[in-house]
Amino acid sequence: MAPAADREGYWGPTTSTLDWCEENYAVTWYIAEFWNTVSNLIMIIPPIFGAIQSVRDGLEKRYIASYLALTVVGMGSWCFHMTLKYEMQLLDELPMIYSCCIFVYCMFECFKMKNSVNYHLLFILVLFSLIVTTVMYGMLVFTLVLRSIYIVTWVYPWLRGLGYTSLGIFLLGFLLWNIDNIFCDSLRNFRKKMPPIIGVATQFHAWWHILTGLGSYLHILFSLYTRTLYLRYRPKVKFLFGIWPVILFEPLRKH
Image 1 (cartoon, rainbow, N blue to C red):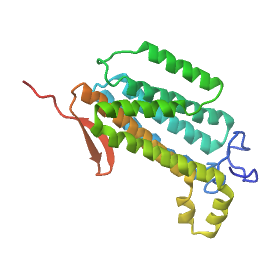
Image 2 (image 1 turned 60 degrees about the horizontal axis):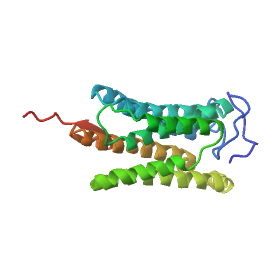
Image 3 (image 1 turned 90 degrees about the vertical axis):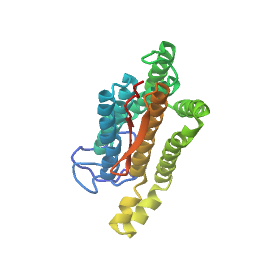
């Protein structure tokens, strides 16, 4: 974590319970943690386009909600790292729980009839959200997601690569997040001795945002691909500009 001696800026004194390793207001007076803030763009812009495309394709609302939930997570994290205010910290942390619950619901409902609603699972996930909102959150969501990936890849083994790629990217981000926390003082001293580009490249909390944003996005694609394949929509993974993955649908064959 960052020491309390960091400078103040536009948003005033820090009131959040967490202050990360990036030096405060080092890049601009208006943003407390610049790189930890702008790295959230990967969780804001691509999911917005994903939600728009899902509406155009007439997909189930749960997938539109998944994309929008990831966008809310990115916006909340942006506000938190930009201000380091406690209210914004809650806006950062709580949407993570709610979005994970939406992801879990989508995964467990992959092999149900179109537009079906599992009220029992909804009740459990809403109850879980309420509990962690008032108490704390832990590894339960991670365990549920891992189990749901196992169920899906047991039915469609060739989808295993996409599912575990998203999980692997997320875990790599989690590793960098811990390095940034544990070795904060050493990292700060290292960055002072290195060229600015190295300092930016070693902002591991920013990499946590990028990798978890990418991992979450790929998880939505994994769930959406599995679901639409089950519904015989003929999904195809395409890469925009040869880089960014999206799911498009081939026209249904006429008999």
